[in-house]
Length: 114
Length: 116
Image 1 (cartoon, rainbow over the protein chains, first blue to last red):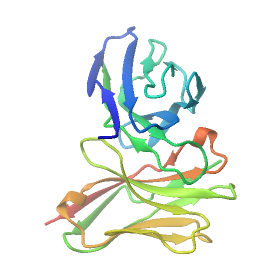
Image 2: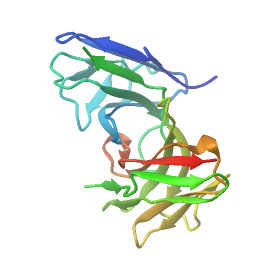
Image 3: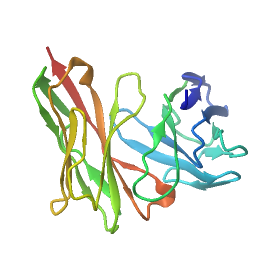
Image 4: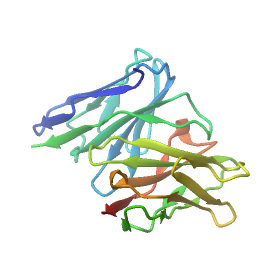
């Protein structure tokens, strides 16, 4: 079945550690996105990529890094520079820009800093 | 700047009744799309319905309909014949034609509880 997978579902990190969240899609979408969701809040954009080997910062990119070496994959690294990383992270993909194209979301990764 | 406002943090509805979830938006983009997503307690975001700013008719998808009033900048979601499985968070989102990378702008969400 076509879709987006994220792993792991739950992730625990110690202070000062970098962690990488996986996102894979088999929908053949060009665009991929990472959003962060805090309790009781909507989603905010961290990074996005519209094509392989290219990505752009979103609204809250500080303390995060990404790569896009393959069309199917868009991993997110939460670095030790991210001051408050505990949150729910959602990956999404879509066919690109414009106002009319929906985004499909993965099941999310819940990150907790111990 | 674009903004989505959902003024109802929580809503209750009786099973089998209809419910309206409010959403107002602000944008200067000449063309935009409005989306509603459902987020159950499992966390996944489920796409429900879409309305384009130039669409003449209100969008409908099964039990979901979108009451689009462009002059008032509102895009309310109507769920008819509520079911217990409709209990979830509901997010209104917008995407303008000039949005950075096609990103979605989300509201704060409304938590819907369906009572038996």
